[in-house]
Amino acid sequence: MKKRTLALMLSAALCVGMLAGCGGGDAGSANSPAGNTNSPAVTESETPDNTTELTGTVVTNGSTSMESVMGSLTEAFREVQPGIQVQYTGSGSGAGITSAQDGTADIGLASRDLKDDETGVKAITVAKDGIAIIINPENPVADLSVEQIAQLATGEITNWSEVGGNDAQVVFIGREAGSGTRDGFESITGTTDNCKYQNELTSTGEVIANVASNPNAIGYASLSAVDDTVKAITVGGVAPSEETVLDGSYAIQRNFNFIVSDSAELSDAAQAFIEWATSADAADLIAGAGAVPVAE
Image 1 (spheres, rainbow, N blue to C red):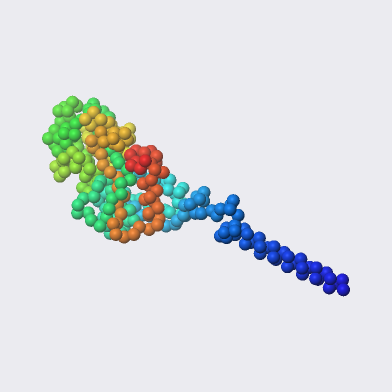
Image 2 (cartoon, one colour):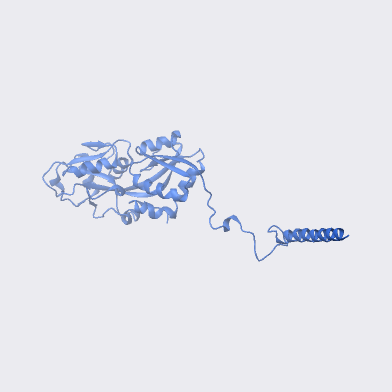
């Protein structure tokens, strides 16, 4: 009898517990209109960090002038999306545009704008860059006009003494055909196909090194790449800087562009990198690399 009574008591207690549990579940459900109105459901936009973590590889290829900018961007992006690897190859702007056209790169890099016959792709400007006119530190010349620079480049002026320098032959050094820096320089100075190069080099670093080693040399290089081995002169009295490039007072400047297909869809990883690199979050990194960010 005692056993039967104990069993009945345990069964009753179990039923009460089950009913209480079921009732508690309905009352506390976030999806139920009868839920606790003081604790609303958390939506995706309200989470502390709703960034989707992605994986994959993003292949970039092109302008050597953008090397410093790309180095800063790719290193910092690893902190934002550690599962994405962004690869950079410096092969020149022309090759970068071609790689975006034929799909061998997710993002082409060009330190110039697209030409009319470069179809199937579009440009996304990530930064602006001044093209510095560089001379050897031993050269006493400090300022040149755009017209004088053009005359030095085309061989109309052949001796530094004609522009206030030493009595020495001008040695003009620049980039190879297809380079975005060369295209930008020649377009702005009106010297396209008329420059008289003593050396045509395949990277910005080589131009800087050649000018640094020759007291009579003059060349051009991305402002972001200029170091203290050469001297960047003022152009029309205006020094190349972030401020003068941004306000347009420095005459010799160009865009740093991401080049992507205008028809093929980007991978999620490539899209994420472009969106981040062109946002205000990356502006200080671009400025730190010597270029001028366009995002505020």
